[in-house]
Length: 352
View 1 (spheres, helix red, strand yellow):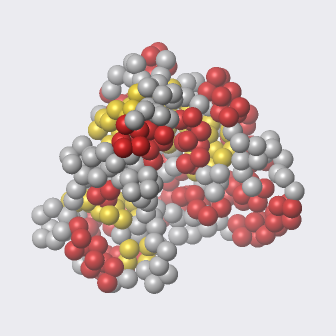
View 2 (tube, rainbow, N blue to C red):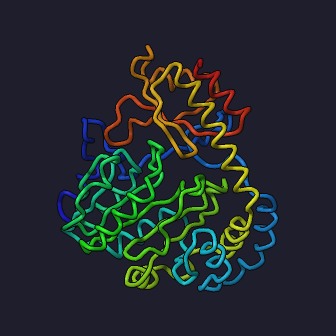
């Protein structure tokens, strides 16, 4: 790792904001462990699929032996959900492990990687851990960027924390330019399941990272996977840890992906409640458009600072996500979209 790699973990953002890295090199994430607070700082589904707990309990007995390392049931369910071949699915313990696996098998010391900002802070950390250099591009300009000379380009779709999904045709055109340039494209689809947009899973030259955490409300089980074709798939499969997913996690993941009614109801609720939140928040704040289960807003012009809004919400029993930890943001807060009753509490806490 080059001398800048560790120090670079604390690099300043595009406008002077901190680069979302703590003193131990970890990236701050949403989620409150205070049971007294209603948590709007993380973007997980407040509901879980029916019979998910029963499926986990039923699979507990299998935990007394090593899982079958080919995970056939999980791969088939995941492939059917995203529209690829089961052999192209590489199971991982969560979406972040899929992202790291893609970085480890693609990026080398001295390489450069195109990254969006503001976006998920783990991308830059993983790039630097490989001894490579992140080249930051505004998230809404990345699909127009030239991928030539970069080992990897990363797209977050929908983007976190801004929330908008990429135009499908524009994204596929960018994937084509990446292939022509010899640049691997990594598409993080952690929130794509909340939309009707198609996955890029199974597209040549593209590695897709997926997580079941957000859509199915089960972050602690750690279910995820990468999808690749050709040489990308072969490298992912070779580098994947043996038994990369627990047997209960694989069973629950396969079960979740068969819950079509749950997924449809979740998408309808999120769309309906997101619009209601956006309209109410827009009376006081500048709210970004979103296709995801969260909204980003700026407090500029509201008569309050980020710290004041965070503190008053906390006093009302609600935890929000301080979005100043994202590169390029200095006046922003991100809030999840939860159930109607919970969203009412959020709007009351924000006095909108």
